[in-house]
Image: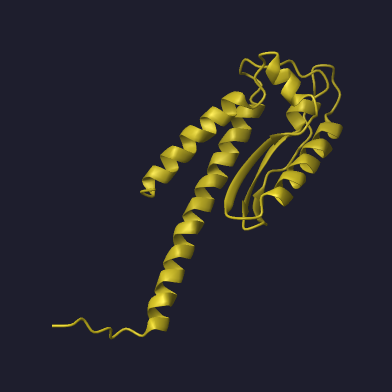
Length: 152
């Protein structure tokens, strides 16, 4: 007995497209949640990390979730006051500028990008200070946990 398709092909494709969009939106939501947790962790003043004299390095930390080149969510780069009392406005600008450059380079798929936008961030990390290293580890754990809930 042969199988006969009774559902119109267009209706079947529509269902598949809607289901895929729903699943992708769940992935985007989970990545947004992970991005927020990264920022909270990376900017937490109570954890062991570098001493931010000017506030610029901490102010340059942010994230974005993009989907096929379109920004779904982008964190603010609110200036943070440094140990010397200055407000990290330059860091805020540098972080957003660096994030925009990375967004342009990642135009396909769903991507979570976290940045520390000051040019010396990598140098601080190389000295053994934690700028984004522990946040990256935390992000990997969060994303794995969230995606496993979606059965990926």
